[in-house]
Length: 176
Image (cartoon, rainbow, N blue to C red; front, side, top):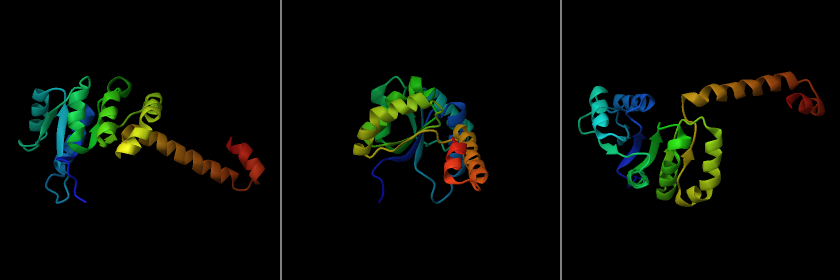
């Protein structure tokens, strides 16, 4: 089913280091048949224009000005897209209004947060409303989460290997 929204992705924070990397990647895919409809967003129109030019994005690539302290601008931005991919952190300082806007508009939200207390707070506060609106809120998608995920995977593998010859009671004690 085709989306009724103007964009598939809005890169929020496109003028920062990580946001720019995401925007550069999307520009590199722009000639592909399945390239997403996307826009760059940030708090400064002038900086967005500068980055768009520097990364070789088309001059007509849409730019959306939205400040993290302006809930109305965030809401308007979220209404225009299927997913907001945000690199604007620290999330406990700047992320809550955007999560709220995405939940209210049924928009997907993706970040690369490494702030577990804030993530727990957002889940507790918004899970029911996100389910009701259809918003999918996905934290920690990116480089910062990968080393920890790999560490957990290796720990699990080692525990299984070490516990393979133990009976269940000993294995349970060993894994703890």
